[in-house]
Length: 489
Image (cartoon, rainbow, N blue to C red):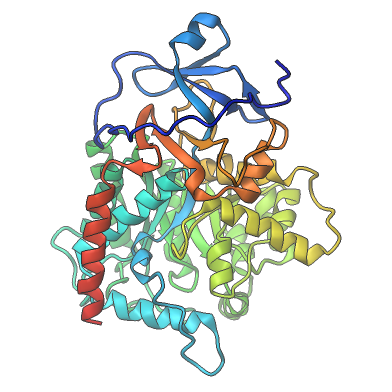
């Protein structure tokens, strides 16, 4: 067979939806194996290759041996790819979808409608709403091929600003939602101390306020301990996330970053989201946000700069020299008129670039990838650029770089890594006709979400024939919750 081309066969007859294992079900007791029409191994799609995992859900081998090909589960008409990694999510924002698009001021700033709806909802959202929204958006992530999420959790208190009896209650509810849906989660516990630059600590609205730095550290340690006690280490884990330099004074950020470093955790921070931010930071500290962090030794390989839109060339060089990560969120950036991170410059400088769904206005990490590239093309005019193969760079951002940003074990189909992967139908109209050389570009630049068929996480099947086992209950509860929530708005 000429392996340049994918096998030619008639589209398979759709099978009846299989019942996926219940979330939390044990790993298979014996070896599992899969044989798709082709599998993406990091550099190319390979035909006639099966891969296998052990009882812990880790990939043990790839094989072309006839006996192994016969023993593997046949995934006819499908291609398998490593699961996508969503490095930045605000799960509760799912309740805002479709309710933030009204332009409420004469200046027609799309951010104003978003802020109005956001501020209204945080004053009335319940713990049940947070849990239901998290399950809903995490299921949407599986439907789009995402197998791991970094949840930037900043809604900490009750709507009236009072603490829950268990201070980390909402964070634990988000973890529980991820566990029920079956997605891996790195929960980044947010510190939020003040409203903006030069503001007093405590000036932030009550639902976000996390108290003193000592309190934030106690909360972070309690949550880390709880997660380690109740979940597998690579399924649920924690990191820290000062919301931004405007929201958290520098001394607190230094203490939180030191805590993360001492426990080998990742830490994330919103940086350079708006052009005004650099000016405000310079007015208070005499440096841009990245320059200030670097001056204090805080920019390193465990650091992720979220948004990272309005960076100077010096900022880009500092991130690259430290091998730090920038997390771009293009759909949200376009929706709110913010712009996107300078993808080309960051990669050229040596920084990593990951992707995030951010506000959940739409959950489609591959669309985030293509928007990042299209923004670059618009800015450059002739279509020459950093690489002659942007699809590979963008898919790397959606997988390997995202996993590094979160300290996750997935991101690639390799021996020793978990069997986290999704499959796409090679007969879906959006990619039909692609050969092995053009399939990745077709998936990155054209795939429709309906083409995603199965999702496996740690060798457990979480999505079968495009449907989650808890689809009905998750959607039903979310719809009911939206009616209640917005009826009182």
